[in-house]
Length: 462
Image 1 (cartoon, helix red, strand yellow):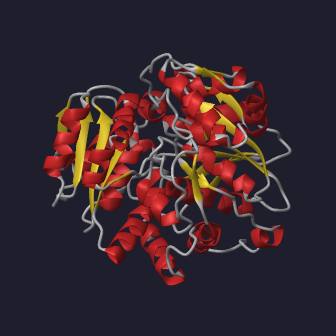
Image 2: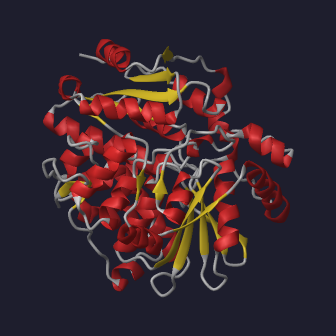
């Protein structure tokens, strides 16, 4: 299994190399040279299997001999043993033909746990075998950072530095990043928004001297292994609803495009997905781009669904690569235009994107109204991101085809917005009940690449 860069100028890598590298040296993102497919019989055989066994069968073809079967099964088992639901990703029916996929039963109450817990085990297993130590640097709009710190805290071969926008994440998200006491994890509060944090991470990867000196690796959704782990729950939910005999559609609250790109990969693998719906909040650049072909960032407006407050969606580059006929040069040109202010998707590529995805937008008022309505109709308490998906799904779904809306976070991660809409303040699960009593540990830092790199050099273990 070979992995190639979306910009076509970086070396081809194995799964292990692509996983430990993160961002390609030409600035691109790694994708498989070919996508393995499953037959209808292989999909049918997933009925009734555990989440862990399904994960093994879906991901194994992508690994290319990096791990033995026993090693990989061990990583999967350890990754999901701390989840709070036996089904790992259970389905709940909201209304006839409309289902909620609960992805918040992991240790940090967000969908990022599905990928991050597994990546922590994969990294540790791979690094222990070859005696390497790496420095993980990531940017977060809230959930990736807490999931990464939880997954890597205390591991022997990894130092973790997470950049988050100061004052722009929820208190629960912040405390999940700042309260772990393990010496190998570090939370950095950056003056700026998520796009600022993401830009500094990319700058560090493109500073090859620094990158090589500290053994830089990435676990943002730029990391292919993150996307791959998220493919699994598309299969488990679709099979539960009748695949492969029955098509299923999905609506995904979308910021950095990684979660819905996993659905795109599931469909390319052979899963009968009818429609993939991109649901955006008021920071609706993806909806605008899919509607008009214009990708022009116009500033982030803070919202009650802060994990989606993004204008530069990294994983969109991966789907552009396919839409442009896997022409790395064409992708690189568009990314250069993005740095200069934005780009227009060529007509043929736009048509390909519009055939692969539909999209919708949800305002702040509609988000709150959806939380209220779903609470009244079903008793289900939605986080604001999940409410964005549900609102858009209800507008766009075909009654003849089951629609699955992805519930990406527990409502207790965003208690203020949920309480405003429902008059109920959601409580944290018992295992996290003392979160607000724990001591915080973080470093506030300016948006300055040199200062951030100096801090990482100083803090990482030698």
